[in-house]
Image 1 (cartoon, rainbow, N blue to C red):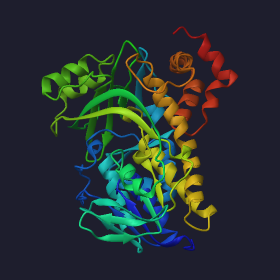
Image 2 (cartoon, one colour):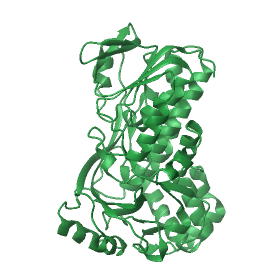
Image 3 (cartoon, rainbow, N blue to C red):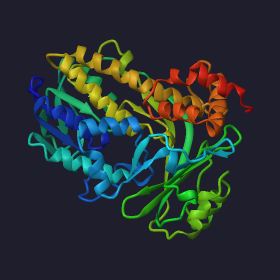
Length: 438
């Protein structure tokens, strides 16, 4: 693609969002520099600055599709590195509302791996691009500006990196409000929904038959408000299981052996406890806390700075239980590419165009995650309109999906962001959902 947008772009953060942004920008700028304060490992290892890299991640089907567009051949490369491909309908046991959906091929082909393996694979791809430089162990102290235009970044050691565009992928803890304050423009308001989610993760040796019915994964979700606990078992590279146990509003999985197993035994499905009681543990139990889902609404800011954009968790961090963050980052990167293609230069109009597109991407998974979290009376924050009715319908829908493959297929497509929510309100689906006894 012809480079028309400028001479230099800087990306803050080398996670999934930052690497995806770097790939898009490399086609449109002469030079791209990606900065990260971490020491980035040369192996598929968790890193200190990404606390969630120790825990289970799900790459939704839409995210897998969009990362494949950004990085052609990625699926096969991950599989060669040890990732596990599987049909979610046939090989993922899904338990909720007292039932486990029977295995049934749905054509929903996923690939399971650790987040560090995904990051390492993308990092190698992006680093190999001739006009991209990846710098680790550097921290951004602020941005430089001329009036309302961001013109680069300043590092902690005083070094200045000029840029036509700065893309902030530094995550939920981004200091952009402080960085942008000298520009004299209002910052975004934030929707903050407090959910008090906490979880703990351990890796185990994987062998055939660990899960019943030859399953390659298990997801146990609660029935709010009575149940607050969730769990997942997923295959990752090197013949390992990644097992994550968690809960809402302070229902925390212990990090000692006996407590971890006891928590698993109290789940409404025995599969997780059966596995960890017999499997060989390979790591310590690592905890993590996630206090709230947060959406910084840049699309509602009237006066936006030119030369600065936010992406990924910097803009919106979702309840990680639902596995939406990586997918939204990939979708936002493609939206950034389309916005850049529509504009002849880096301007406030470009920022407005991108943020509007990103808001449409975020709105659907946000409504799913936040709506479900309001199934608990302890959840606080801006309450979506009609959430109680929607949650009641969702419960019926998921119960109906247990016995009706067409309802199940519709549900999975919407959950994986392959189909619009209206799919779940088609008459053929609604009739079946409303017939069930909740």
